[in-house]
Image 1 (cartoon, rainbow, N blue to C red):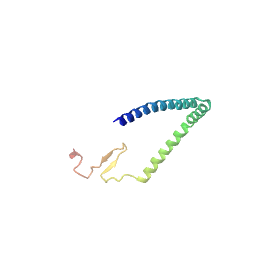
Image 2 (tube, rainbow, N blue to C red):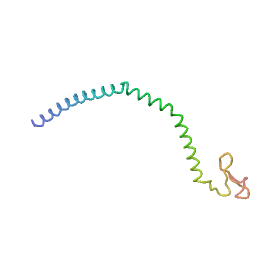
Image 3 (cartoon, rainbow, N blue to C red):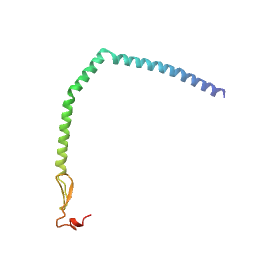
Image 4 (cartoon, rainbow, N blue to C red):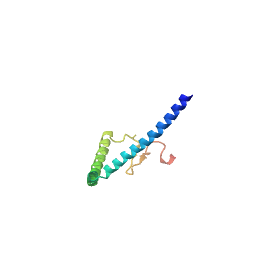
Length: 111
């Protein structure tokens, strides 16, 4: 029983000391990272990168638009036209329309 109590007390003390040391080391690392990020050479590179992105954004957007148009065209070419039965056609409005002339019950008998 005494061995278990000693172990638990030792583990608790190790945990407390370890977390304090870990927190101290974390604060050191965080401080160094903040110092490095705020330094003039790093901020100069960040500003250069930001300006490059801003300058190239319209070029990239245009290239993406062209690629999307090309991909759409390629897909349409590969898929081909619609294969509709003779009684259906796609109108200029883009909707499907049924041709009821001489086929089926007639327009007056459709629901």
